[in-house]
Image (tube, rainbow, N blue to C red):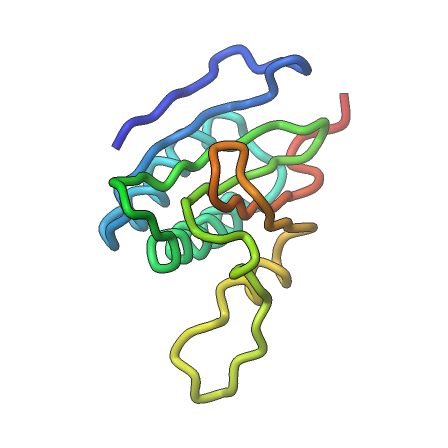
Length: 146
């Protein structure tokens, strides 16, 4: 795993940090642990537990659904956007394969984006600037307005 912390985010460069993870199941708890460690010093007003839960769902989806003929990594970035926290998860999968499902009660899978949709203030899926797919969520009110 590689990571970067941007110590001096500003309007021109709002990224707070990033990490690259191997597309394996062990990366999910690693992403949760490191994200929590990196955002704790910012003393967010929103629930860090909720953010970690949503990050976990998106990294799991990236590991499970990302595909490539060449070696690849899951890339996670988080940003301060005015008073909101935006978390992005990038993978080489197809953007059109991302969809909100309505699983049956006995389905073992398919609730990740439903959870993101119900907890986050907003979320988005589309083409990643790195190629492949990005799925992101925003938590409003993570910081007092400046």
